[in-house]
Image (cartoon, rainbow, N blue to C red; front, side, top):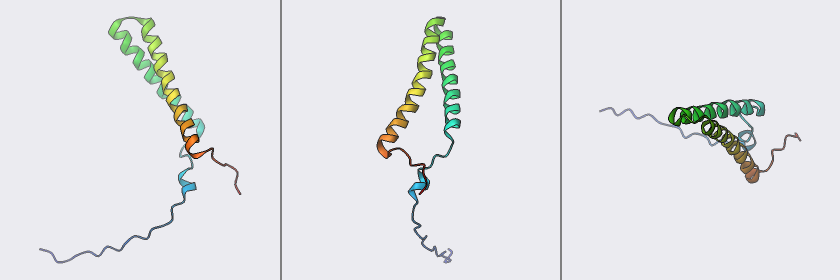
Length: 94
């Protein structure tokens, strides 16, 4: 057995800058584009699955649109919920 024990130095606790953590990691425009692509893709997938399963084009398109709209509803709902918790970000610099 080895008696060589590595000494681990305790890490210094650096102060956390919460303002840096609250900054968005992608731009708003990029987020809208990603949500648009995802909602269209999931809506088309939902519509295709219903059309292939039942053959009813009307119901497939209806549920595809509803599912795509629900993606946007969740996106804006979570954005609203975040503003309720944290308030609107202050973009003006002091």
